[in-house]
Image 1 (cartoon, one colour):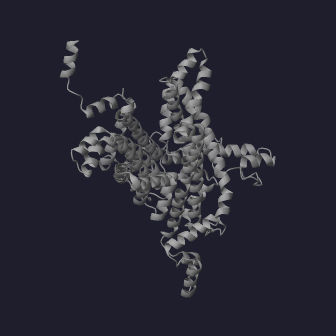
Image 2 (cartoon, one colour):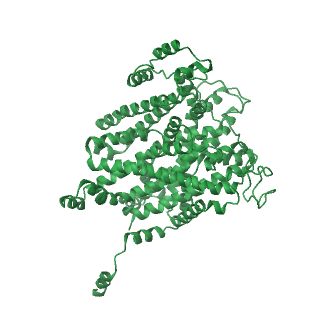
Image 3 (spheres, chains in turn brown, yellow):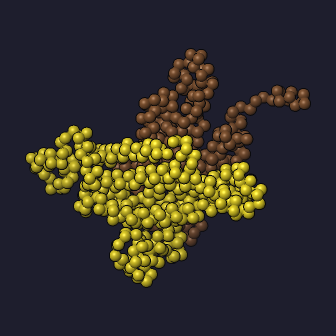
Length: 298
Length: 337
């Protein structure tokens, strides 16, 4: 009995990061997701070195060549070429840059503004809170892609405007999640203690409360990252997002739609790239949620 | 209970104001002069231009213009298409049944497959079936549906030749539009094979549109079912010697359904969004394709009216779901009243 108590005392407590990793790494799906995401990030960084051809280089002698394993394909263009003789593999590799960029920028914009507004709403309550939440309810009534389409119609088509439009449609989710977490934390003793100690409002908000509200925000950020990739690709597909010849996956799909019955690879591969990337991020997100959500810990 | 119904219904007013404001600002932020847009390439004299500006009320302050716009909207006047010159409301009401037919079929597919799949996955927790369903659901949830549609066209229309590529019915049939719902109309027409043709056109778009809701419903049903199966009253029911079918199908399902019904209701927004993409892929003549076409043709009255009408429909359905939720879930009913 005594030995057991002693050994417990001697054990150094697990750091939060190690605890998080223990839960996260117990989930095989999350690890696979993480692996794929790391792979995609590496592709994006080293696209220039890995891709066999340039993304906009067209080869007059190679229109709609099939991939290497199909009849008529060759190693020169391992995944075939599109209708104007551009190498599919190279375009897909360069496409990772756009998808990751879209995810990062959309999440950065909507998370920064959303967390700030949600923090203020949960902290000050009152009229400001009511106003913000009504606004959030209104925006959430609109289907997000419809809202994004309207915003792009206002701002004009293009990759930057598509990212801004998608960011705006994701804002309310961050506001909601942050506000709920802040209200939950505000009632706790440590906040009162800090307040009694004379912490300023800014210190209370940013240093005392905010770090304890980050778990749901991080989960929301992962979900938004993958949705942003799909939504921006959907806008690209409708001709409202990135414009050709940008090797953005959704735009590539839209470009090659007319060849759907003749050359399956020009349609199948960009979509597969979107699916694999999004699926990997979602798998990772599930693992993050399980590892960060204290209610699920046993 | 009444208070809950009342306060929830009141929320419709600011939401509606928000939607009209969005639709109004949409057209007003478009670069270019609306009068010159109407006049076309011929141009217009300066006097006539000022006169028209005054006639359309475009020389008034923006706030007055907005109030006038809301006045028109409340009277059901959403303007005319710049291309076809038909009233926007009339075009919408002609195309809307096609979208309803598609979304209903998709919702039906998603529920009929998702509900049992989620239930079985919960009952056989950690079995191969469970892992398979959850893996498929995650893939479905991550699916870019515009690509999924093209993929199914390649497989079922091109390779296997089972289903048509686009449209609502084969051109061989000339069905008089009575209800606008082609399934009903083709049944009423009594023509041989008309219904079969309608259904074969409907099935692929419905599956594509239903994929994401299917994934969401399966996941939600599984987790709701798992929660309920752990409750004491289920153990009591089992201890009383009730068969597993009765315990799961009757005792557990009834309580597990509460969150699932909400989720199904909330998928309406997802379905309308998806309809925009699905209709574009399959050339389905509904309001989603109409809206995308209006952007490409710069037909702003149609875009403005379409956004307003679709937003209003989604708002109404969300309201109905919330109210229904209050009615079927006693916990909400009693806590809020």
